[in-house]
Image (cartoon, rainbow, N blue to C red; front, side, top):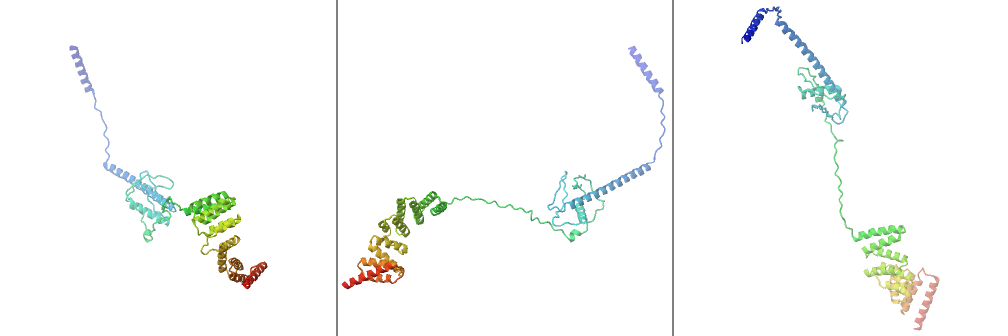
Length: 376
């Protein structure tokens, strides 16, 4: 313990001696500068900085105005208005001048006035035609704006009328599929048309098939029946041709066309009795061809009643034809009607159109009739 105490005592003595040996430092006094100097200097510096900032800002505004004018003039010929989006989503709106282009000076003034009216204290970004981005800077209100002359008010620019751009979507034509059922007559007409084309192309097989279809659809079609019968007869199938015509006559007993066609076919086959049987019916207002064939077949087969009836009808329709009077006179003579026969012979002799042999035959018959009257 004594050793520790002695050590501590030595340390305390040494500290006292060090403290007593410290000398006072002498610091020279600095000269104090007047605060007025600092105030004047600070004011001058701030004034210089403010003037520099104002000059730079005016230059920047002038450049922006020139850019606006350049952009407006460049976009003037474009028909549709173009909107350029900046990164900060602020757009410079330009009016469409597709129908009218203002002078450069007027466009410059109007653009500056519109820019001042829309955002006097907001950052403005202008998209240049040279794709140079301008950093947004605040527009100082103290800058003198360019006053726009009342040119637009005196002659207002009419708004463009978008006529060519008005696209109207035409209504899509809707195809409606309707199931239309054709009648039997319409289907038969189509088959007949195909058959006629086939005949023109010498395709008898197709024509026969189409005529057959048409006749099945419309069994009362007499023209189609006659054409189909002619095809059968051309194929040397007389039996089917005759049967086809007879079926048509059974459907319409008054059919003059089918009876006449059947009679002609049987005459070619040298069957006068069968031909006359098809003409036994006397239709109303029968044609001259029908009556003539009927009278001739009746005279050939010596069917006096039918022959006299037919020739009498013919002579009444065409009294100037000597053939009809001659045929009637022969039938009357066969019926022992001498007076009527003599009269008919006389009328036939007085008409033209008969040969000399026929004239001689008529004179002989008249002499015979006169002699018979004398004998009586």
